[in-house]
Length: 302
Length: 256
Figure: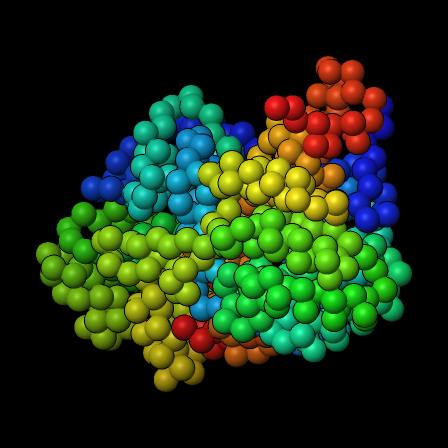
């Protein structure tokens, strides 16, 4: 049985990754799970300089999920290179670094710095965070803006680029096609869905930022649909995510067309979710006598 | 390795309206320190996130923990229905806890306001010092008061004036002309702000336990931050993580 999967020429031992922003750089969860068992660790977004993020409250629970507006708090690329990369290099897992910025130049700076680090297998470009005022989603909601930043970053990147797409658009396939046309190597989707919660007793927004990105099991059907539509529209490999709680959910994304999957919010609920999903996919393959994981990718039938 | 564990409910009772007192059997009790907290995971799949709840007391034989909590939403409402013998999922003990050595043999205030009172009980038990326990309640339902009285001289403030000083814990300090060399406190933000100010004026250290909405409880999500005077070691901005760098901070370190 072969659990390996390929995304833009990079081979992963299995298709299970961590969703950016839910797993730090792996340190906190390495106390719960063996990172060697993961296909890849996708890090929290890193910018050219430290970002303080948004005021609190930053998180709120909603039915079957949560809202967050962390605002991409991160230590900046210098600390990241000195501390987080050496930590992750100790493990036999692939490193994918999520990159954020306010301007194209910010992204370029980070992408160039990471080009010096051969242990980083891929870069995931965050053009879809709904919680910061400048940058991020501003590049991910208009096809021409996405095209421009993708083609610009391709000029500077040493590693393959994954463009992380926002679901907060009218037509996800239009964005996917723009990224593909600009030279993106892969796509990941979905980022969080913009939402809002009001505390009726205090008559206040539950989140200081007013809006937050919704994640968790409640958004899964939206994500599966978007992964399927995108897989139909482009040739690029897709890393699918959005509410994956168990192996069944992960397999659903793979059948819809994802070559790999990321586990996000469920890490908070079940710190062992990632490794349990690896095991669960293996059990599924054994049960249905699937020789290669790749046989499952996009294998849903009409 | 850290572990999410199964714990068994030993007992549960309602101490005051909406305030519940639950003892759970768990290995966490072996190493739990005053001021630390545990995460309790609701069983209802629509309420996903763990609820951070402070440790109120550890049993003598260190096999069980007591948590005293207020029903604040669906998760804690679910917990309040648990009965003896039920099993629950917990994670902990989390956070740094109170720095007991800073108060040893000194004249100290242990100050608790409302649902910030519970963590002061285990602290009162473990701290060997000249303890003045100052607690603030809404009304005459003085939950945990009789437990606290065993470990120090206790002063009460009530918002409605039904018992002790009318007002809050700061009013109780003034009315009784109390003094201390060190403060340990947990309670609502206005109370903690007043304590920070008082500690600055009197040039004494105050160790305050903070609360914030959390998602992961283990330092990964960066949901529960507090502004700090110095640059924090994690993100190198001025945001400490309450779940892992706290929940207890020296008042001068944080901007609240």
